[in-house]
Image 1 (spheres, helix red, strand yellow):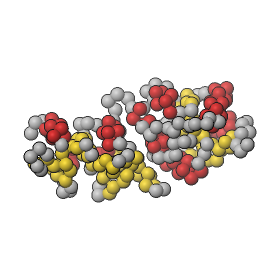
Image 2 (cartoon, helix red, strand yellow):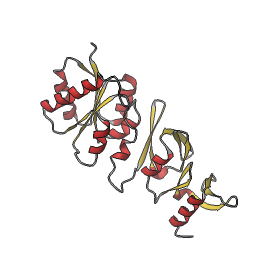
Image 3 (tube, helix red, strand yellow):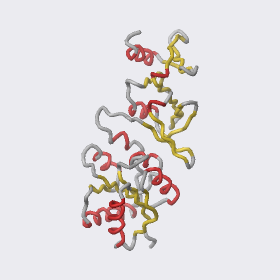
Image 4 (tube, one colour):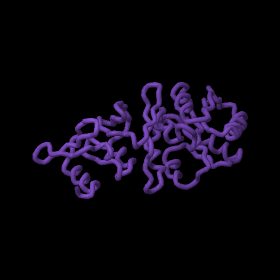
Length: 250
């Protein structure tokens, strides 16, 4: 049998070294790449198509959850983390296992057994792409969005998002005169962003309130938001009511 191909993604050299040492004694697992940050992890996973990914949660450039938004979700993921509270629900629901730092060699071998069972399973459930949402603390909202554009990864600060438009199972993100497609529903994006900063103007549109220059009548029962750059966004009755609430009834 071919060995399982593994990637280690962790910004700490010591953590990578420990994983290397533990994996050295496993004849059926081969390390094909090590990545010190999230950008390199995305590239390595998409280029090398590993069987298993040992993934830290907090890393520079992109965190572990953002990495998983941008890679093939069929890869077996073992989270390697120092955090044992708010993200546990997401770990339990999505990962093959999680290793809480520091962990013993025995605990690591148990994790590998779970990986092997998963790889031998006839059916493999893909990782959900909303792990970042599941891991948020109550009242915490995303401060940035990540989107893959071919081989490139773009990070969009939430405050620089002008508006988003639903396109089937995707949303078109519009920011500073550029647009990107992200595989996510408009409702999912709405729940991830601060409702005090973003208005669900219409069933298909989510708008940064700071970009709205004015809201004006369009037809008898509809309105439109005119953004500072001249873009016009349809506003439903519910969207107009919400806009007035956010604007203090003006």
